[in-house]
Image (tube, rainbow, N blue to C red):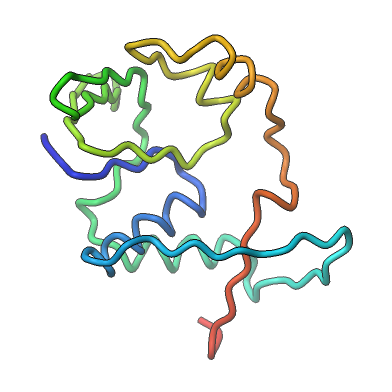
Length: 148
């Protein structure tokens, strides 16, 4: 299988990236700068975060999502593509992709995925020491005209 983008991660951010790429394939990503306040106002989503994840999941074509899959290796090739080894139900598959986007905690990325060529030692150390708990740098806010 060959693709332009492969997003690795089962989180809300991974689903949102897939949704954005599916619905805006010809536009560049938009970066939103946001300040960080020590005690921002806390708001909740009706139905909880799972309702947002399920809504995004249901908006995507079924062939764009792989469940029960684990990425084990990323092999960068000289032609600018990478071979991604995916284990799904004890069957290995190689996906060739131009861009790999990791939507997962850096510590898990460092612990669970083998890279060829290997990541530099200082990058591995930085990834391994990055906390996986939720903090201000790991959240985004979206405002909708009406609830879903």
